[in-house]
Length: 289
Length: 265
Ligand SMILES: Nc1ncnc2c1ncn2[C@@H]1O[C@H](COP(=O)(O)OP(=O)(O)OP(=O)(O)O)[C@@H](O)[C@H]1O
Ligand SMILES: [Mg+2]
Image (tube, rainbow over all chains, first blue to last red; front, side):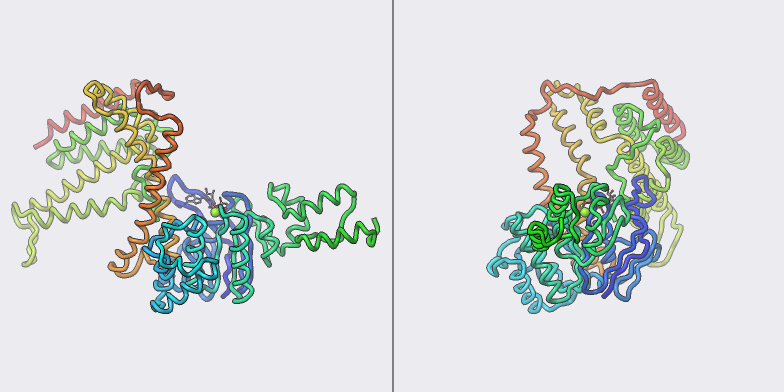
């Protein structure tokens, strides 16, 4: 299922004194099975873009195509449930959406809303809780007795159990410890690779964007500043830095080395391994200084 | 969804109403609430409607926004109207459908009482739309100041009120966020059978309650950490100033009151 935004504009509180243009002229394509990262400053419109991906927001101009449905500005839309079943969203701080008495019931809530039977939902709950790295015994607990990190994982499991075709993640690791962060990011990457789950990730971490994504979109003040493959995006780090955005640490290091030796390596390195190879070649003199 | 709601919201602008002293605005609203009960015929209600619309135009707030924002409350107003229409059984019958009769007095009562209700909401909305919560609190605290002598907890009351006002928008945002999160999990809030929509309230209210309690606790801790200990000996950074316009506005309302007394039947 492909999703694409076509020249989307969105104004919050349109026609009131609080009207606020959040995004304008945003065009993004998300082919099925791809991994897209969206980066940008706080307030640049990332979350607003995400909410268009399953029709939680309707564009005030332009159109959003989700599979075979087209959501157009200025038209009444009915029966959006089908879309929401296929596109799962993990919101910023998803732990705020927990409400059931037990973790199991909360995870089953989504699937059962979409008409999945109780036994099937429970099976999915057991699967999902293991996927997010928690033990099955937690299913019987109240979600409110868990730690913040555990609650986050339960909330994520609740979205995974819907078994969407596309998963949309709004800073899923904000506020987690480094290890938890890596576990969660690896989990989504595995799902993406194994099941071909299309993934859209909003993140402030350039490392994550560089490591996992096929395609990166950079948002700036409500518009798309740049989009392309990670290598294309980061091969011109000066532009990113000029907009106050970071580049991956590896690349920053490479830039420092290049500056210190007054040279330019043959390629842009996004992982430690790549950089070690390039530097080893350089230092042992296999590449002329 | 909630973004069009205007109750408890402040719209910054530069208008006569915005510049007025919060005390005079509070006095006017209080007087208006009393005076509105004087109206009992077309003329007197007409005067009140005129007065309210005049005030609304003074506020420089777009009419479209005001009306849009009051829409949710209009349902309540309509409900009041029909309640009176159906339940009052006095005067001549003006519509007879056999199983159901509309009485003259019912229609009159329905129109007048729902109109009264509407005007009250409009006037109080104008107060909160043109006055920041903090101003309202300051004004109220000063107006009720004399009651401190009889050990009435004026400061605490004012504080409670300002906290409540301050958190209305936050609560709305939160509501919006949770509605979206649960909608993404397959709940339908805007369509579907009533029974399902009622059931959908639980996944909304529980997270809302939990975050409100948490926020209340955090606020209490933050206040204590900054040494809050009530109004005793507290000085104010913002000073209230009463201008000629404030006196004129109150005189205006007194004039309206006299008109009402003259024209009421
Ligand atoms: N509910 C809302 N009502 C009014 N304006 C909003 C609302 N939500 C967001 N905005 C505005 O829209 C713009 C984009 O917000 P958005 O939440 O999409 O940013 P973001 O890129 O997700 O930021 P962050 O990294 O902080 O999450 C901001 O200027 C914000 O103030
Ligand atoms: Mg955001």
